[in-house]
Amino acid sequence: MSEKQIFIFGAGYSGKAFARANRDAAAILGTTRSEEKFAALRQAGIAPLLFDGALTGEIGEALKKTTHLVISVAPEEAGDPVLNAAREAIAGMPALQWIGYLSTVGVYGDYGGAWVDETAACRPVSKRSVMRVEAEQAWLKLGEEIGKPVAILRLSGIYGPGRNALVNLENGTARRLVKPDQVFNRIHCDDIAGALWRLVEDNTGGIFNVTDDEPAPPQDVVAYAASLMGVEPPPEIPFDTAQLSPMARSFYGENKRVANAAIKAAGYCLRFPDYRAAFDHMWASGDWRDGEARSPMKR
Image (cartoon, rainbow, N blue to C red):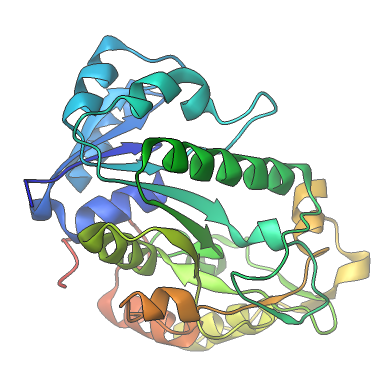
């Protein structure tokens, strides 16, 4: 196979983790909306480009040499910003082998705590998840039209260095909201990175839930982090009386257990199969505070 060039639309937290994990395996370019973020992208091994919803000549030239395209940009009312700006350019990419789209398990909606896999019907509750379903379908349709594999990665709650309950406990923002029988799946950013690289390696298309093995009550995660730090966990707060933003409250309106057999069948083995394994590692290594300055992940 020819040398890879990977282009990431929306090189944020997950995109930087992906680049750091295996930066020597390919030339990696990525977009951000602010030049102030260029240094952080370069530190992760990403050549930065500006994208604010308009296709620039610089991006167009980069796409001509790109073999693998990763999209990590949220859809908008008007549709997918990347497709709106660059659909024609993407359809004509001469070197393109594979497309990966980072979506969310929110597309499934509420299943009352039951297990769902990739065959479950999408019945999104929130407007943002409705738009995600539409964006997934648009990318799959484009893949069919141009004869390229498209991988849809449905991510559960993302955490990792700089973004976790240990940080929240340290800065005083951790809360233990309790809603009976409520569980969430999670995924460490290094496992998003690992799953993406696995699919890139074989140009594997399809729909994949990228999530851990253990859906768990959110208050348990905070309590476990507190036990590692040797501090008292914050008191439990009944969900019904909690002061929450509409978006935060909407997350609790969906309850499901998300299965991950498909990504394992594609050959990926989770580095952190549950939150305890991840928190144990982050606490022992001391990398829980900052996700920007880590050394590349050994694979």
